[in-house]
Length: 122
Image (cartoon, rainbow, N blue to C red):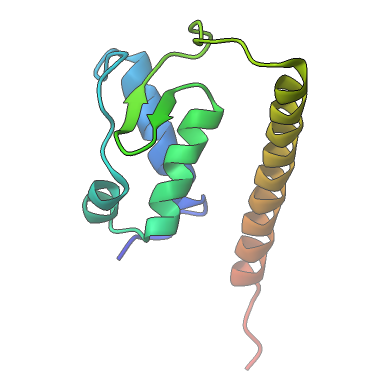
């Protein structure tokens, strides 16, 4: 079972991968571990593994291909194929929603930590 460090586990996993990518341990184009592999190596649920990979994609450190897996990429690398303005607008809106949800999740983590740290009456 994963130890609680005060920070969401998916963020810890994603940050570890980002560090390894920046340090050159994981080069662009290399396949990232699958959700199942992350579950096994980090002792987390599928949801946490999926959130970690999603965070890497959102931050520009991974690109996923349906049925093939996720691969290392670097933030700012040129992305293939331009999309319609409507598609780009929807994508930007979804990115904003994801950022808002991420901030809310982080705030919930902080609140839960505060509640855990409250003295127990008894």
